[in-house]
Image: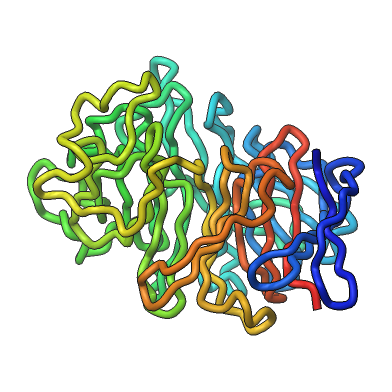
Length: 380
C-alpha cells in the first residue's frame, strides 16, 4: 500500500492515507526534513534522460525513440523532429541527452542511443544536432561516435554523457552483455571514452598511439554504467555501474586504469553461480570500487547537490534505483561516502534519471510505460 506523509505543526508524521494513484503529490519524512514530491508530467514513454534549456524548458528522451520538449511551466509537451532512428529493443533505444557547454552560442544537443548494425546486433552511438531557434527540430544531426564492434542483442548499452570543465565529452559504454570484451582494449565495450566536442580524440588520452588499443578509451573494465556526473567540487568524473547479481559500484575513473569487470566483482551470476572469469572481489592490476553495494539497488542516474536552496542536502550525492525503487542519498566528506539514506522507497517506481534543476530542486524520471517527470525538494 502507498502512504502519504503529512506535516503537522512543523513535525512530519506518516498518516495511513493510501495514495489514490501515481501522479498525486505527497510528502514523506526523512533524516533531513520532510521530502516534498510533485508530479509534473505523467505521460512519458519509458523516459531515460533529461536536460534543462537556458529558458527553463526541459528536453526528455523516451526510450522508444522520441525527444520531448516540456514547457517551462510543465503545462505541455511536444515532440522534436530530427532525432535519429534507434534500435528500440530490450534496454536499447534513445538514451541520454546533454547540451553543449556553449549551447547559448552553438545550440548543439547531444544524444546517446542504441544503433543497429549487421547480424541483428547493436551498439551505443552518440550524435549531435542544432536545436532550431523555435525548438521544433534538430537540424544537421550527425553521428560523432560509434561503439565498435556492435555486439549487443539488446542489453548493456550504458550510456551517460558528461562534459568536463575543459569541454571534453565522456561517454559511458556498457559491455553489451559480453563480459570479456570489457577487458579488450581493441573493443569499445565496457569502457569510458573521452572525446572532443566534435567527436575527435584528445591527444592526451591514455591509449593514443598504443598498438592494439582504441585511442578513444579513458578507462576500462566497466560493466554497464548508467549514471555519471562531474563532481562540482573536484571537477572529477564519477560514475556508477550495475553489478550482476550484487556488486553495484561507484567509481571515479582515472586515465588508463582498469576497473575490474569481469575479473573482479562483489556479485554473482544471475544463476547464483560465480562469475566464471572472476578471481574474487579483487584482481591484480585492477582498481577496487570507490563504493559498493553487496545487494544491488540497480542504480541509474546521478546528481551532485551543490545548490543553496536546501541546506540539508548540500554536499550530497543522489542516485536513482530501479529494482529498489528509491532515491539514494549519500552524504560526502570530500570524496568519502559517510552515510546513506533511502528516500521515497516504493513510492515512485523505477527511478531512471536524477538531475539538479536550475531552481535547486531535484528532478527525477520514472522508467515506466507511462513514466513521469517528478520534482523533489524539502518542505519549508
